Length: 229
Image (cartoon, rainbow, N blue to C red; front, side, top):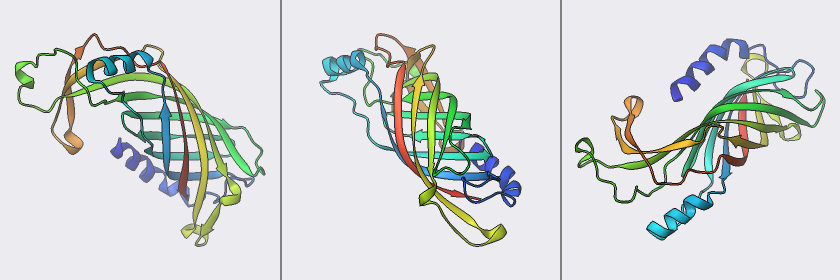
């Protein structure tokens, strides 16, 4: 995922030289790399009962970091998004259309997300017997699901400012977003270990049963600050 962000950024740097700085101008073209803080909510009553019964605890979600590369071309945008949270990690490609006027104080976009959700709670399958390959390794429970969703991404143009001039100008953008995701096919649990590290890291796991699936619907909201060309 890090390599993909970097490649997209390099490919688009040339176009950035002719981009407008603000998102409320009449010739809207911008590339914005954003970092944000977000939180995901998911009603997992069955899974929470399972963890309470077997481990006497509930897996609580915490605020997390988000990364985003967004390309705006007049009334349309598309990009790459990752939410780096515990226990939920999300990633998606998205595209959408502007809802507000070009001169509006808020540049609001409605986007369609297509991506995946991963959960890594700190619990293990009950009565699981590790395979010979898993003996002596640090094992982890992991949930994987594909999802589609809708998001509202909103740039607050009153908070926008810039530094530099012409080709060396950099824009500073802030705003907020809200995402609703749905897992049409549900997900599955795997128990295994990570082989390798860094770019070569690979999760090797076996599918496990008897653990309630997570809710098919989740909600994420956050704020962001971005640098644009």
